[in-house]
Structure formats: structure tokens, C-alpha cells
Length: 545
Image (cartoon, rainbow, N blue to C red; front, side):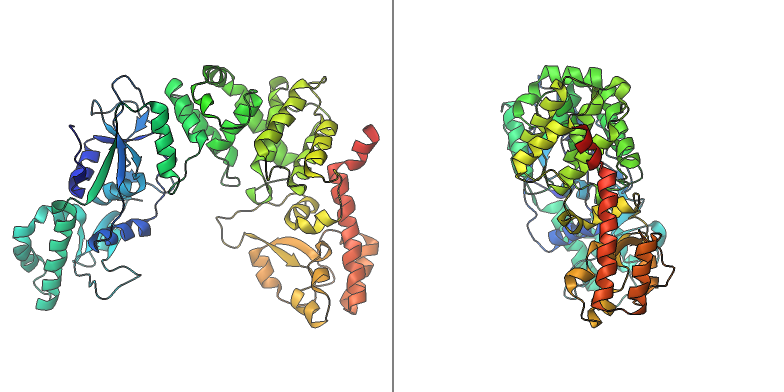
């Protein structure tokens, strides 16, 4: 493929993509556009709206850049594509900006989305908009498209050509009225003009001799307004250049960490954890792009890092009772735990350390410890962990003192934390609550044991109604079926088995007034506080230190 023209026909560009003249660098994010957005792009082109320019770069012959092909058959449930080193084109151009739009056009003309192809409704009436679109495009199966003869595939329309439009319409849509046939002719002519005659795509070419680091900087800047790429994406891409099989390992590890969708970890998290665990500093520094020591250590120690991450997930679910991303308030709070476990024999927790890690994790949530200046804090905690004289002991006392110094907050469980982090508290007292967001009816909701509407009618203060003493987590279906009635005498909630609290509950149920409800809510709050304090083992920390 020779020099690229500054403006090109859409049909030519998608054909060049098919012929592997254009590829994507590994640092590009995966394709994420939904069908409705692809259809909106097509409508914008048909409506003569600008869709922006595209940025390409042809690496010099001496620069090896790992790339992948555009996706032809896209599955929304699929995993991120793995890079492929070989290209049919000796020196393909790489798309630095515009992947989502070009991928959409390529799928529209040559591919399919979830096994459905893109069709244009040739009798669309641009004056009468449907779903805010002047021209109707839709992904359909062949069977669905056959229900209306006006649906045509995009490539079929291109092949008609302007001179043959009139005869094509008369032969294919002979039963339509003259008015409709005229509209079809106009639509087909417009389509062919937009996609195969006019040069609609402005393309900018980055200088071939531009230093690679400058190309990466250009890439980050132009993508900052779209699918944002971070420095970790660049680190990951550079790692993959040196260790090609690392890409698959990272992607498989992300899938392992996320299970069936319970969590939402990404490659960024693994990169950050590796930086800290390997003693490279948490910050994404451009110098690390060329850090051969880091790359070498990642290759040699990836198995240990993987084990540490998986052991951390086991700790998270079994010891910390966090079973879904809803209750993991900060992924960064896990990194000191990964760092510590990475240093243990076989990356397994030693006896007596789980409660220290659990306390540190929850207190980092309660104190919002990593909400600002996270990189510097991770570096300090790494120093305490890596330099502690007892490598098999988590230095919870030293780290807790540092947390207090940085936040100006006391490292102690306060009752205000009960109301500030309701989800976390309710998750603890209910022993870890699973959430299955993909299944309607299983999403978790906060539920008032005594319904808020009933309490409001009694004139009970808002703060007391919504206090942790009156709250629990139940699934959506149960909450809907429960209705706004006084709870049954045998209703289950944390503390319902406590004899004294049960008496307070029955008294409030029998005569619901502010005094009786207050005694129940405050009494239950006390039990909750004791449970959380015991779960986080603050008494043991005080006794041992």
C-alpha cells in the first residue's frame, strides 16, 4: 500500500481494512460500540454530518510493533482479541485514533455483530425520524430481513451503482407506489454517493520518522477524549513486544480474578500490583516503558505474581467476606495485600495474618485512604512491608500509624462509620452477601426493617429511620414482595436471635412510636457495632500491641 491520500472514500478504506492494509496497535482498547451507536454513525454519514478525522501511523522498517487485525465477526460476549504478529501487508498502517468508527464501518460492510448483518431500510423517510434517526439501519438475521423486502445489505447497495438504480428499483420494488419508489431511488443514490463516490474520510498521517515515545504521547493525547487510554496500556503494550505470550496470560488472569462477573478488575490493576510488588514504585512513569529489569522480572516472576493475586482473591472472599465489586470500595486497597502475599512462601497466607489484612482493608475503606495521593501511599506501605524485620508478619501497627498521620483520622472503629458506609457494614453483619447483577431480581437493595413510609407517618426523624439499626440487605424481588407493612413477628435480620433485642423489636412492633422504635434501632446498632469490631479484631490489636 502506497502513500495514503488525505481524504478517502469510505468503501475504499473498509476494503483496505479487509485486505489488511490497516491494523490496530495492541495498545488500542477493545471495540465497545453497541449496535445502536453503529447505526447512528451510519445515519450521521447519510445526513452529511461530520464524523471527525482519523490518525494513522506507518512504523519504520526497523520498529517492531505488535498489532492485531480489525474484527470481522464481532461477538459482544467475547474476550479481548489477542494480538497477531503477522500481517498480509509488509508494512501496514496503524490506526492511532478512530478505531471505534472504522471498526463499525468495517463490520457494517463486511462483518456481523452477534451473528447479525447490518441492513439499510431503503424506503426510509428522512422527513419522518424514527428513534431520532433520519435513515434506518439495523442489525438483522437473514430471516428477520426477509420479512421486509426494503432491507438491503450495505455491500449489495454499493454493487448496484448509480446508473443501474432505476432499473434495480423497478425490478425489486415493483409493487410499491411511485412515491415510495422515488424515495428508494433517492436513498440508494444518496447511499452510493456517501459511501462510494465522495471522499468523506479525512486521514492524518503521523510522520514515519517520529520517535516512538513521541508517537505514544500523540496516541494518549488524541485518545483522551474518546476511549481513554492510560499509561498502563502503554506499559502493557511494551511488555507484549518483549514477551508476546504475556498478553494472553494477562487476559486470562483478568478473567480468573473476575470470576463470573462478580468483580471488575482490569489489566491496569495487574500492572499496578506488579509495579508495587516488584519494588518499581506505583506511579506509571514513562521511564518504565523501557525498563528491561521490570520486563525481565515480570517474565520470570509472573507465576508468583499470579499466585499472589489469586490468593488475595481467596482472602477477599473467605476472610474479608467481600463477594462482589459492590463491596470492594477501592481496588487499590488490595495492592498492599497482594504485595505482602507475594513475599510469602508459595504465595499463601501464614497463620494469624488474615485478621490484620482484613482490618487494614476495611479501615482503608472507612478512612478513604487511597482516595488521593494513592501512588505515594502505596510506595510507603510497600517500604513497611518489604523492610519489616518479620517478613511473614503484616506490619499492621506501623501502617495504621502512617494511615492516621496521612489522613488526620484516628485508626479506630467509630460509630459514625456505621452510617457513612452502610453497604460495608451490612455486608459484614450478614456474613458476606453475593450479588448477581446480570440476573434481574437478584440485585441487592437496602431494606428498612420497619418500612420508611410507616415511620414517616408516625413523625419519626429521617436520621433514625435510615440508621443502620433499621437496615438490611435483601434481593430486589423480596423487597418488592415485602410491601410497606409492619414486619412479621418472626422476620429475620441480624440480631433477631438476641433475646433482649427481640423484646425491643416486639415492643416497637406492638406500639410503633418514636421512643419504642428508637430503643430498637439503637439497641440493634449496638449489636452491629460489636459485631463489626469483633470482625475487624480491634481488641486483639490493642492487646497484642
